[in-house]
Image (cartoon, rainbow, N blue to C red; front, side, top):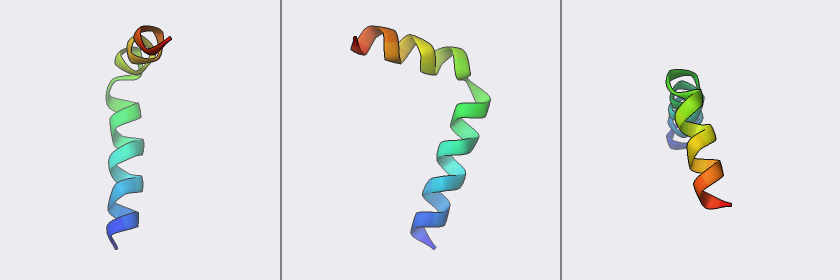
Amino acid sequence: MIGHAKECYASERSQVDPANKEMILKTRN
């Protein structure tokens, strides 16, 4: 159940702010 919640959270987050995800990847590199 915990793993399923993690998957839902990850997919939800990526859908909510894909631009923010790109910024994080850029700052990491």
